[in-house]
Image (cartoon, rainbow, N blue to C red):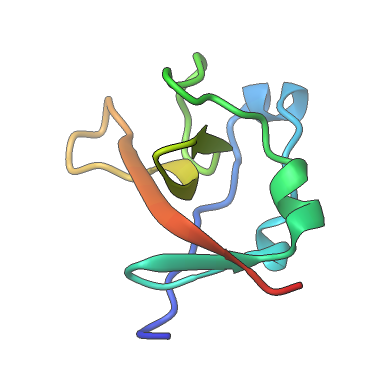
Length: 94
């Protein structure tokens, strides 16, 4: 893997209503995300849309029969009123 990166902590109060795996269960770099299949199954699937309630650290999965599984998350943006949308191809470790 290249340089490891980090998904931001989900600190928004609305985060208490969003179920997702711990960030400690996922390793990411600039191109892939490593996790177990069990961790991937904890992610809510948004295959053609993005979830509402936009705040840093919120993660979801994207599954498409024509492309690899993806881990997606909202991250920091240069515009303080917005979040970036980030994603990585998922590789399973089990």
